[in-house]
Image (cartoon, rainbow, N blue to C red):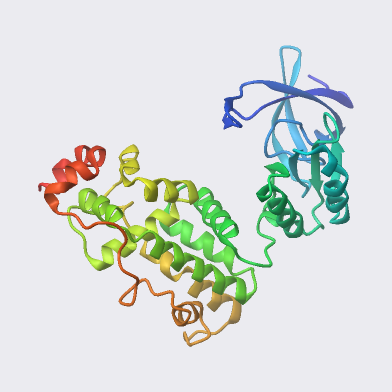
Length: 339
């Protein structure tokens, strides 16, 4: 019977994914101490994602090496890497993060740091500050391990937070539309009513943003016809897939040719229109929708994606122009358009 020692050198593989411009298949080693039948991370790994200081992990022994084999219990810590581009700003930036209770460890000098965020610390002001310095190109940061408590510890709603919620719900649901609605509603109803209202406003802004003749042409090719309702629900579906997918399709709807868009399950997502309403109802206990609900407030603010929507953007098309307008998508769905 194999006996696991009190302290081991644990092999932790980097995540095999595209990250910062290169494919990573390497391994790092970390000294860890035994915690009953498992081991506790004494610090956050340098490269491996989704692990943080204090996590309890399982290990396996193979051919003389102890390998990481999964998380048993999360510590609650989140972690990120920070690269300060201008050395004269190192003191100012680190002082601010320390003041917000981020725990800083120097990696390869004062300009390359790791920031660990304890579970009891509000991550929102840290992220707001880092977003600001990143926007000014004073520093760059990479969220290597952001736990759910910190990811959705929101006091305000902006497009970054909106997309975080959409993408987390899509990830947890594995793309199942009904599950995504349930998960997204549960995530959203945790927040203040004003945050839920802002979510609805941003959703409507994106639906309106996606109203272009080229997006409409994509629906015509994929589905064979376009109605007011199907076009609206199609744009909801684009939003439900996340920020990168949405932006890629808006930039060039021919991007959809990279995917097999199922007519029966993938082309619409009507229920996304009612997520904020459901979350607001759960939060307030008010059953009957009235003027205080997100949809009414957003509509009163001029965010109408229906009869009062702004004009569709771009240039209108005829069916004869579709093969030239979106050639890859046309070739993929030729049988539908001509059926």
